[in-house]
Length: 85
Image (cartoon, rainbow, N blue to C red):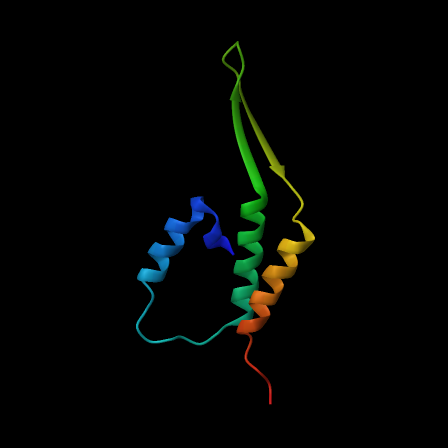
């Protein structure tokens, strides 16, 4: 889903090219924490503005995630959870 965004496509390609040869264990807690952090970062907009007097202003806005984005993200994460038998 993130690879569809041109701004993040190159970073994802770089990370994918540097994956370890042997698969590691899946850590659901770490994955959930990382997915939450990524979701927050991707929704946060930071703006620096300078007025006519030279004073800087920092504005941080966090827009709410769309329901479809959250649903897609949850489905993709759930697909990686180990199946219980």
